[in-house]
Picture 1 (cartoon, rainbow, N blue to C red):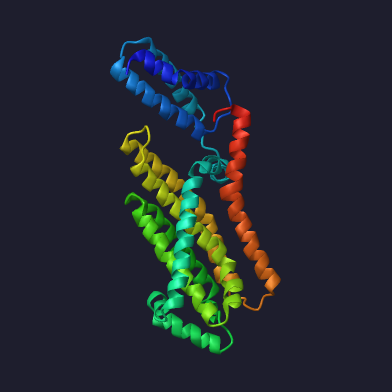
Picture 2 (picture 1 turned 135 degrees about the horizontal axis):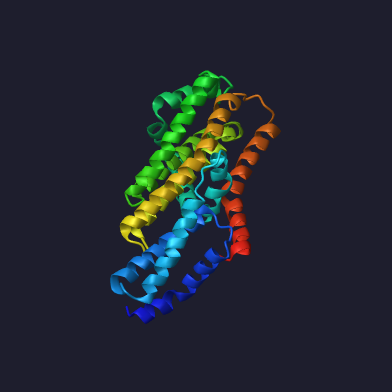
Length: 324
């Protein structure tokens, strides 16, 4: 590409970035890093093809200024943990809403497939859930306590076991994204089919409501976060398949970084889900209104934090900095 064409193609972007830097706009570390990466790519290209040009000197000046701004403001404060969850992560998550929607659709479709398969093959539920679990649950149903399984282990043991297992599933969904996202899709499919057949089993036994009002006390957060972890894996898969203007290695590195942040964001929610399953779900005698309130509140929390809040911060960022 001729230098004039290169400048014409990127001039407006460089001027905007230079203006943001000179005016000392209040940009987040993530925004500064994204700008720095993009300018570094342009500078690298310019050094390769126009090493002694004014364009290279100009870009080098902006990049150097940004580098100083990033590292001069890189002071770790005592509330770093809080800042990550309240600002740093949600400010960037809107970029991955398409992968979140795709993860949700994959999970939803295979949940329906699981229910349909269970409805058309009497042996399917046993092949998915296992004979021991099915026989135990049938016995609990005959004893008028379909959800007795949640009362068997101690509260602490169940809380720790469930929390650790859920975090393990979350990390697997993320790490399997390195298989171009196919591994993540398989894990989502596996869990969704299990859920679909599980819920149909209770429907077939005439205790669907008892299962829904009990299981979804913890399941609302648990299933939602599996879908979010699936989003993390799909982000990694996308970075491999569609690197856009970056090299495939750089795109993959960025995908791993973004995916890991998504997974980290889910850990507190898995702890909450483990607490609910260990200490609250076992109270099968609680009134319906309280169970419904917990379920609705859990869903509202997920939708607020992963859907509404990132979009709110994006809109706020547009108004304040004009970056996007």
